[in-house]
Length: 306
Image 1 (cartoon, one colour):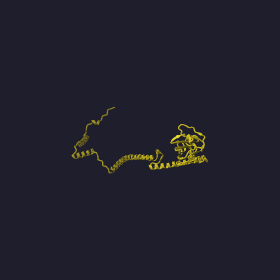
Image 2: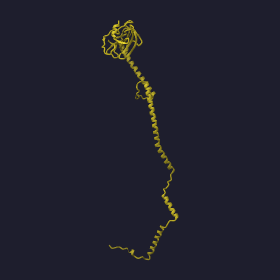
Image 3: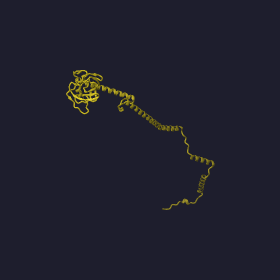
């Protein structure tokens, strides 16, 4: 390629171009000198103030409504935190007092129950909570139990009276004169088999056979539920100047004819044979004590009965 040469760079200046260049140079020099000219004192202070104002942080104007809203929000936050904490602390105190009161009430209830009855009070069986309600509930239950017991006793008495009516026969009220000693039965089949610890003589005989007092005396015991004797009667006598006690056990329910304190005569009807209490077969269990000491009943009758 051919080398391109700018002919204008090497062309000599003409009269038409040199004034334009000189004018341009003057303008450039004037601009440069103007930019390097020092500032006047007023302009300098103004510039310094402007620069310091720019360097200082701007102060924000606080709006009063915005401040009020901010304070209200902070107060609400404090209230939501402080009030539940205060309520929790007071609730714990109230709960502690309540538990103490409940413990005191329970202790009082236990004291009342122990004074009212020897049985332990089962609170799970009661819906009442105060001592008055518990006492009222216990009284109602006691009344119900007493009523049930009376009804049961009436039922048993009715059944016993029906059975005793079948046992009661036309028997003489007395078989001997006063002051004598007689046998308690008009007859018997055989003696019961004795065993260790058994005090008394067993006379095996049919149910309903009449039983008579062996001598004059006073009834000192008469019960439908003796300890192992079932229905029994006990009579105190004075025979030949000696204190004698006779006991007649295993009588039939409802057949007793005498009560405590009643005076009886020898040979007076006092009951009928059965097998109440701890008895094996119908029989009369007879015990005799002379001066407080047990003696063989059959031996005593054999020696004293006419």
